[in-house]
Length: 362
Image 1 (cartoon, rainbow, N blue to C red):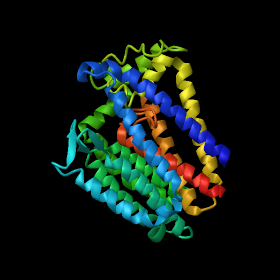
Image 2 (cartoon, rainbow, N blue to C red):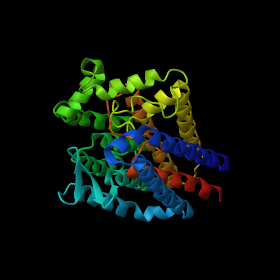
Image 3 (cartoon, rainbow, N blue to C red):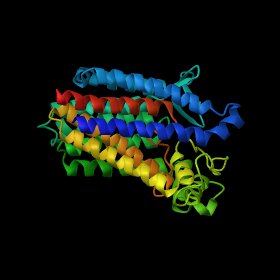
C-alpha cells in the first residue's frame, strides 16, 4: 500500500501546484480591477491551502477508526449547521443563495462539511449493517431518510449540485455494500418528480438546461459561460496560447478561477495540458480504487470508496460542464479550483484516505 499512498500524495501535490499557478493566472487581472490587488485570490488560496494541509496532517496522525463513535454526532452537527446557515443574520447571502457562514475575511460552507459527515456516517452504518443492507426497512431506508433531510436543507440554500453529488455518493455506497438495484431504482423513480419541479419550475435552473442544449442561441445571455468556455478550450489548440496569456479570463468567461478553471487550463496549456490533467485524475481515481480494494476493515473500506467516489464525481461534473457535456453546475475542480471550504475538506478527505492506507499497513 505504500506505493499507492505515495502516488496519491504526489498526484495531490501536483494538483495543488497546478491549481495555485492557474488561480493566479486566471484571477490576477480581475482581482486587480475589482479589488486593487492582483494577488488577492492567490493569497486567500494559499491561506486556505495552509489550513487544509494542517488539518490533513492532523487527520493522518490519528487512527481513522476513532471516527466511528463520532459518526452520529457529526451528522447531527452537519444538520444543525445546515439549518443555521439558512437563518438571516447568521448565514451569509450572496447572489440569491445563502450557503456560507462568514467571520471577518473567512467564510465557511457547511455543505462541504456535510458531505464528509455523510461519508463517515454511511461508512459506519454499512460496516454495522453488512448483512442487512439488502433489506429495505433496516438496511436501505434509514440512510435514505438521513440523506433526505440533508438534501432538503441543502436545496433550501439553494444548492442542487451538492445535493445531487451527496445523493450519488450514498447510492454508490449502498450499491457497493450490496443494496438491491430494485430499491435504488425505486428511489430514482421517487426522486424524478422532485427533480422535475426543482429544475423545470425554477427559472434559473431551467435556463441552464436551455443553455446546455443550445448555448450559442443566446451566447451573450444564458449561454455565455458555456460558449466562452468552449471558445477558451478551442483557442488553446494543441499546446495553448501560453501560460498567463489567456484572453477569455479578461472578463469574458465568468468564474474563470473557480468553476471554469479547466477552460483556462485548456486555453493557456492547450489540449496537451487538459489531457495531462485528465490523465492525472484518472490515475488518482484508479489508485484510490486500488487502495480501497485492499482495505480489510469494513469501515475503512466504505470510507475509502466514498472519498474516491466523491472526488471522482466532482471531477467528472466539473470537466463535463467545462466542455459542454453537462449542464452548468457550481462544483469546483478538486484541488485546482479556487474555493476555501471545498479545498480544505478535499484535503481532509485525502488525509483520511492516506490514513486508511497507513493503518492497513501496520
